[in-house]
Image 1 (cartoon, rainbow, N blue to C red):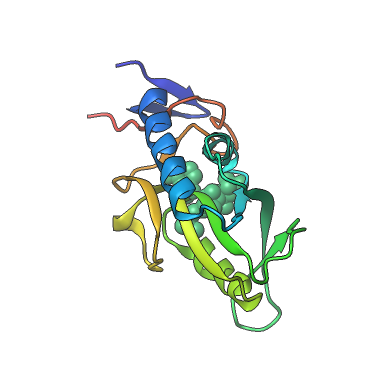
Image 2: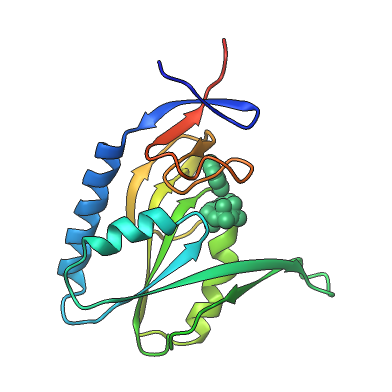
Length: 180
Ligand SMILES: O=P(O)(O)OC[C@H]1O[C@H](OP(=O)(O)OP(=O)(O)O)[C@H](O)[C@@H]1O
Ligand code: HPA
């Protein structure tokens, strides 16, 4: 098995580039069908989703827009815990058919914090498309509309996903290698 080193950890091959691309193309075809004539707005969440979003969008043939946002998390002054704000959402969401593009849903915390902000802007519809979902790790359940791969609760890198900032440029997806 060809292990790769990212920072202090070793990772083993999990999903090949070809397998990922086949699924992503399949999802693009599904979206082309479901959103024909609706001019959907894809909102991709940086950084992790940039490669997934690019490959997906490239294979969408219907009229569609894409916007990239970054979520900034900070502690509110009250006891409400983390507040998440979207930076860079420059396209009007109201009355649009929105598809949120995420690389991974792990605990579900990120989207649980962010989705109400989108709903507040009253989109015509709001659906979630993710590359990877770890159901065993999800403690904030999210209704996922489109999911490419359901994966076990193991840390993954590559195809946009990082470990400690690195590994995003690996063209395939690798899983944490556990010795033993
Ligand atoms: O379901 P959750 O447990 O909230 O995890 C999922 C989120 O974690 C990662 O983002 P991260 O904050 O690491 O930023 P990045 O996309 O810039 O890597 C990933 O891109 C998701 O946005
Ligand atoms: O398994 C993961 N890998 C990389 N980034 C992540 N963010 C949440 N889960 C993960």
